[in-house]
Length: 245
Image (cartoon, rainbow, N blue to C red):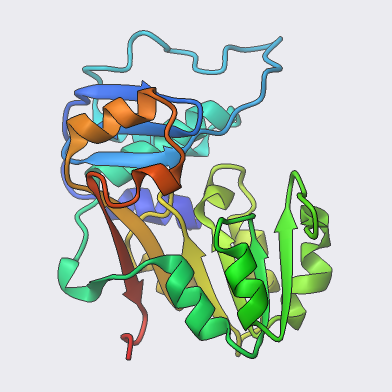
């Protein structure tokens, strides 16, 4: 079973979707909880609409929207991941309130680190790591093209992968490139906080729990980036395969 299918199969129950909010940077779905995912889309849609049932999502079953996570449309897949995060029951006893960037700087100090996705903590991590490679589909200064993953990930002692790799369908291929002895982290608000990751070679998962849905959905509409959302209606949580010291 694929990772995304396993995550969907693990969800309990169902809820009616109260709201779907698609902002320029984040998408929120509010059902049992409010789930977030990084808004991902392309403007090319000659053969189909970006969201086939746009205008009719509110009131649907959240589990029905979860199936969007496997869609070829990136925007539908975004909605699907946010829907998964809106239904998932997080085992809070296994989580700690930890910022992924701080943890990665700690775990990556003096080691060779590869990060899939350009994060705001990149400068701090570059100062701490013995060597840092940042792989990005839209490379910024100092980044490498995402296509270099097969050459870079096997070299890294620590690998961090953005949860948005679930949206574009690259997550499992990236995980297979990681060495068995490397420390592997998946991070970002798109990341479902489920221990199922640990069956796929992941050691640490860092995601987000929305605690004030109405506030966060308003922020989504107003175009917040995640640095602006930090500490305002969300908790940053980390779950470890073997616990954190």
